[in-house]
Length: 97
Image 1 (spheres, one colour):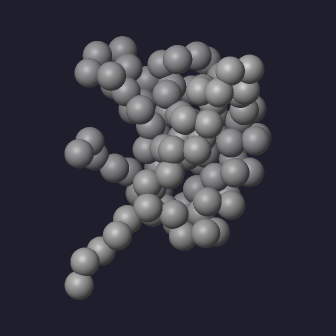
Image 2 (cartoon, helix red, strand yellow):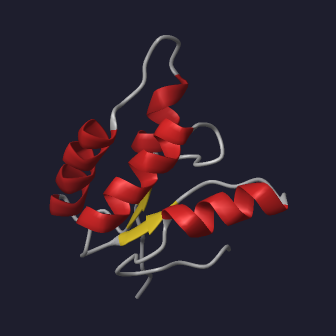
């Protein structure tokens, strides 16, 4: 049997629309809904982009316990360090694939 995994980018990609951003609390609220829908992986943000994005990733990581929380990084040491910081304490840590 094939397995299909849902990887949702709403919290990161959704902020790419001009003039749109989410607070940490808004990201958590959406992440809870995604978790309740059974999403397998939630991409929570791009933590190197701003202090607010790092805080949003941290907030989602603290709240979400039943699915994997991921974050975007380029292949740069600072980006990777920001992701590791943001995802510290994740219930279901993930590896790059």
